[in-house]
Image 1 (spheres, rainbow, N blue to C red):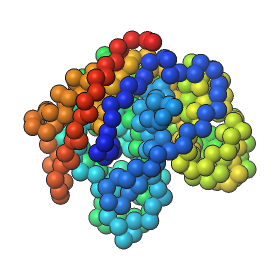
Image 2: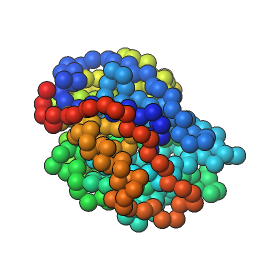
Image 3: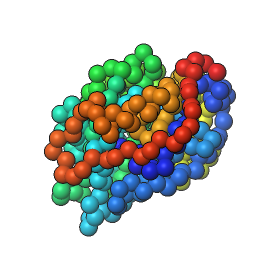
Length: 321
């Protein structure tokens, strides 16, 4: 998914200076952002007080939206570099097109994983006709320096592994959870999982103490480590945990995000993840005037112009703070 903010500001992310090395309960409130004509998202990362969770660098939650008489998601072709996009749905469908020639309809609980590497462009739209409701999350994973120039590619996985406990089903989206590993390609140690809880569930989910974690509330009423979470909010949990208490007051949906703290510092602006301000400016210029990001064929409409890069001088060191 694109960042459609026309006033996008370069942000330095990553580095262990942002990481909390012990268990915490830090509630993150979303920022509401309009995405296209009829989709509003709740942006949880980057957040004023929290830039990343492991390699997870961007989290939008949207819906459930009634789009029966609306166009639904309509995101024109736009560029990415230095990251992976993760499309995850609870309701509805999204049609993905990209400049490698991929054309794929993504449905609930299916993984759409696009690795931008050095450069890619893509579009996302609700099919015509489409289901009445649209509900899901769009996330970015930052690529480490050693892999940020890989060839762009897209993966779709309809069958993903599960971890179960009384009242809990966890679908492993990326990485490994309790011995179950997703087929999606990763470039840093991380995990992403969709947690479905039934009303009355009271259980504990095993975690890796070397990871930092956060939980995004998708639906229902649940307590995470004793903290009540409303849909569209996220709880940052820090590091050092071996398990996570979960309790559901109703049927509930959560997303668990975690990973080893991302040591490299990044510069993130608009839809680009880079290491320097100069890289950001060069990428914008090549999107506007060049062919580096390729062409998305078959989309009915114009591609998205990039906003102007503000006159800042940001530079990530690429080292541990």
